[in-house]
Structures are given as C-alpha cells and as structure tokens.
Image (cartoon, rainbow, N blue to C red; front, top):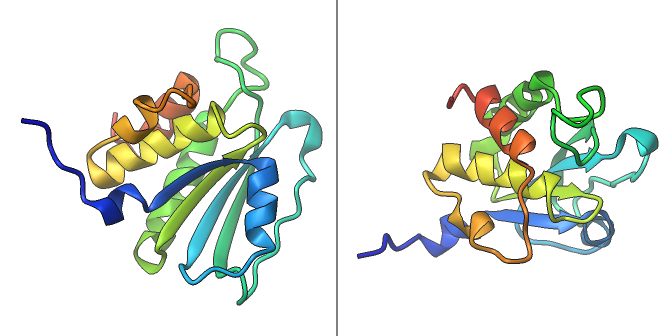
Length: 152
C-alpha cells in the first residue's frame, strides 16, 4: 500500500522558473515564504527579488552556479559550500515559514534537484519532484544539497 502524503507537507514546496518567481514576488500572498534563488554564473546580479509585507517573502538566499554535472565543468557547477549554505538557510528558517520556493532559470533541473533534497531531508520523501515528468532534477544539486544537510 502506498504511503499517503500529507497535503500540507507536500505543498510546502514550490519549484519555479526565474520568470515565475519574479511574478510571484510582485503579487500578494497570505503564506509566508523563503526563496532559494539560483542564478547562472554569467548573471549573478539578476533577478532582483523584492521582500515585503505584501508578498510575504521573509528571506532570500541567492546562489550562482550553472546547470551542469560536476564531471562536465566543475568550476561552474554547484559546490559543496552551496549545499551547506542551503542547509543552513533552510534549517534557520524552516519553522517560521509556510512555503519554501526554489527557483532557477527554467525551474526544471537545478531548482528541482535542490527542492527534492530538501524534501527528502525535511519530509522523508522526494517523489513529487522525481515523479513529475516536467522536472529533471540535477543530480549534482540533489546530492550536494543532501551532503550539506549531512544526510549522506
């Protein structure tokens, strides 16, 4: 018999593109949120995401690395330090927020890998990401985030 996931726990996470996250930050939201903003190495300055009482975004962690696997281009992919920053950020704000948003350029690979790892550590499951045909989690991001949490 499959394990039934609590709706609230499953919907505590959103993986989105940069464009969707920018739109999200300019709208009113009741649920408090934190954002992990993943940018590419060539655009470290963008996007500029506002935090205010209207959008209810409480904290933003900005990181910059490309959508690649370590073996391809180690100087541009997610580092172990990035995984530790994500773990520290989530652990610090987890109990005070209702929604964890992870975005990258397309909302398909890097953000999916990071979100799946956070879900695995905090909720005990990651299948909403891995079972989603529209998501293709970057495994370097997934494994380095798990390592940052000292899960593996």
